[in-house]
Image (tube, rainbow, N blue to C red; front, side, top):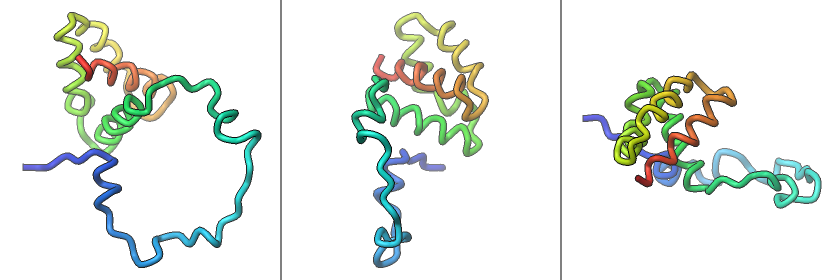
Length: 113
């Protein structure tokens, strides 16, 4: 049986060499505009929803079918009678293009159901 881990769990369990892979002292800080608030002023999507979408897209891009990657979302859509709408979104997930990412985020929203 293959275990499927979330991205967050994989990152937490990853072993790094002493001092990490990258020495932060070797990096230069480049300030972009007025900081994070200014940089993300138009973003309004919950970080948990983004995390779920990233997790499912990662599974899809790693070789799982889109149906397998988003099966929990599809179950949620069935519970509230939105399976047709969710199916349309799922059919438009082809990779990491903007339309696919938008549909992945929207589709992941059905998980709460």
